[in-house]
Image (cartoon, rainbow, N blue to C red):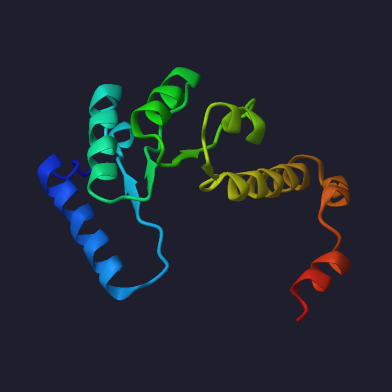
Length: 152
C-alpha cells in the first residue's frame, strides 16, 4: 500500500485544486479524500483531522473510504458539517435511509454491483461445471430489456 501524502502537502493540494477550480469557473465538486483506512493507518482521529483540514482548504465534500460503523460515520459527519460526507457502501445490512439518518449526503458503491454480477457468473459457471445444467440462466436479466436499455 502506498503511504498517504504528508498532511501539510495533502492540504496544499486541496487548496491548489480549489484555486484552480474557482479560477476556471467550472462547476466541479472537489472531494477531500482520506484513505487512512485503506493503507493500514485507520486512526479515526487522524482521519477526522485530515478531513476537517481538507474542508477548511476548500473541499466541497469529504470522503474517507473504510469508515463503516455508525459511530465512525456520525463522528466524521459532525466534524466536517455543514460540508457533505460521502460513504462507501460495500456491506449488507445498511440502507440509503440509515445513511441519511446518520447525516450522510453522498453514497458511493464502488465495485459492489460488479461483485454482485460476478457472483451470478460464478454461480452459473459452477452449476455448469458441477452439474452440467443451465438452470441459473433463468435468473439472468432479460435480453429484450437489455436491448431496449442500450438502443439509442
